[in-house]
Image (tube, rainbow, N blue to C red):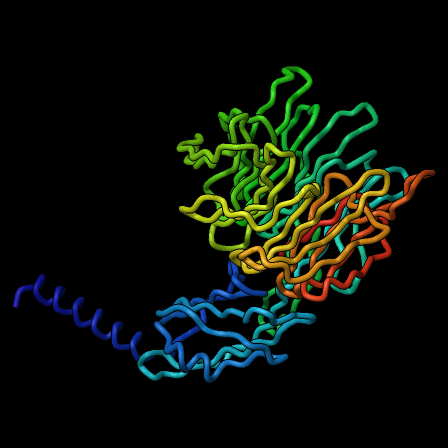
Length: 441
């Protein structure tokens, strides 16, 4: 037999032996990660070495405290979803067990997971303002030095940090990034940990006259601003992986990145544009009319719009892929903020009506506009420039309220938590100018 024939045969035999060894090995859990988008209070993506039997995973795995959940997906990348309506008030212990499609058992794995977001805020402190983060134990930690003011704070959508804008006494603005390293998912033996906060890093070298910020769930960041030297507005994209590039973007207002990534919403004189990004901005779809983007829904490519009608009334609309905007609410009141659950199954809207001491009202609606609840936030007003955000893990809304006063010295605003079902209000005793959720990255 020729030498090359022996070598070829030996190689094939070795490959067959290796294949048999791999087939005889038990499946392994290669990794877990929080899902970027969830239709409920939280979701995990799991990666196994072999295709798993999903029914076996569902039978053998355990969640403590017990919570309704389901397993979705096929193959070696199933997903674990907490059911809609589950509320998470403490870390979850997860035991992953089951068998692959050959019936070979997985060695049980013990993990700890906390899908709850944390609050980041611009706090009023001696000497000016400071960006701060609240841990789950209620304590506040600094994210930045004390600056004269912090006009803007934008949590990065992947939970990896925050971007903020500082302003000095001369009115010069600078944009900073603060990395926040979270450990909200870990092997139980290792345990969870408090976030590690990095030092602020400047984004850009020249001071700005103004700056607007927007982020998506991938952690990309858009910075709109103009330098004193040029006086011209520019829009820069800072991808999560680093670097930056300028977007050739005509705009009549602040742009916002679409949560799913790859696109942004651009206000124009004749309506709202959805633009795709492929390096330079490419592709454009326009929605005509006098409309403002109010908020995005977590999944399904849906968004809430405020439509300013010719008769001077306003309407809250939901826009869904491939469909014309659909009205959920209309009235003479001003619509100042909104939030959305899942694909628009529940929606919350803040309205203001009246002069002197205007009435602030929170509405809860279903996807057809039927009113599920209403609460007048008597004696409170929304801090200008702030919004309304939902924490799906605990089903609570976050907004920034200040006591309503007829005259005298302005009072300080505070973070307010509102139960998304009962609309019960709870205020945190911490003076702030704005408060936002930082997702559990």
